[in-house]
Image (cartoon, rainbow, N blue to C red; front, top):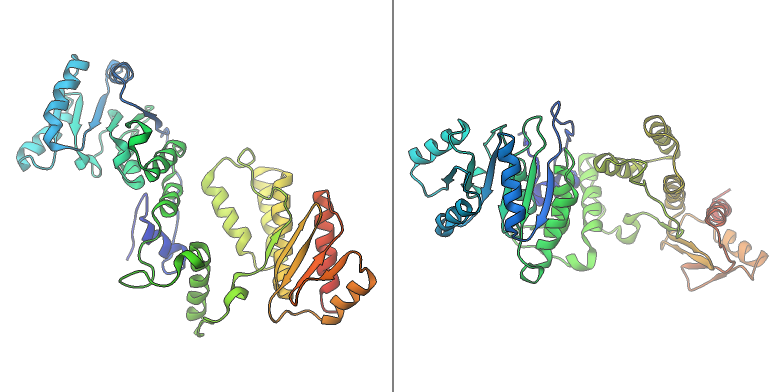
Length: 396
């Protein structure tokens, strides 16, 4: 079964990210295709009239989406008064099939230049001459739906425009604001997958463990749940029983050095590629794989900026900490701490000798924490100290 989608729904995307389905991303746009410029605006007669006139002046056509059949006739009269030169047709799902077909054919043949419609145009419509869409009450639509509707325009080499008309912020829900911010910020070509990940974050993954969601999802957290599920799927594929009692150890080491560790967008503007690289860095199994990835990035995008170097250095430290059974390594300006798993791969004598040699700098804080008490004001100091500590604690 092959599923093709521009914006996978949260549950489908979650299944792919958890390993229950294979995922391939096609991010190459058609030749000469331009991104759709997206604007969020309150109802403004002057602005909307300008949008109509600009599109009509270049011989183009417009969609005006008004998703309320009862008031669509009144909206047609308002638009006719606002833009008298426009020839407006109406399309909605309650029309007789033959009449609806005739309206769509007339619009395709440019017998009128504005199609006032409901969401019936969301899919299956390809009219290259229509390059402006105005969506009334855009706050009422889902993120994937807005992306699909925006995709009705910009299907040729002409610049296309999308206007999302919204009410006052007080009339919108917080989730609606998040959706609108996401759709406006992700207007580059091939943004569907990135928008789908935003949709997953906003809406959640739906029912995860059966007919009704069960378990303490708020306590576990979605990220950890996905990681544990991925481990279980991997074990089953290898013919092994998943270790459901792995607990905290299944999470891997956490390394926090309080330094910027990321791929800057001015180094790599494409969001898709950044997400893919983050995934590859976090999934690297050894130092050699990390080095190969660094070489690849330098070859493709140029020398690594400091935040990206920090990202790779922290990934290297995580690999070492995982081997030693360290749950968390944290270093800051005033020192830090190491938190061990219940059964670490560390010789207790190495910890004892470290404390005995430098009691002013190191001390145990409970049975599973090593306190580091010397100041580390600079990022390079923290990286050096972390490497030295892990080397000291490594079995000889």
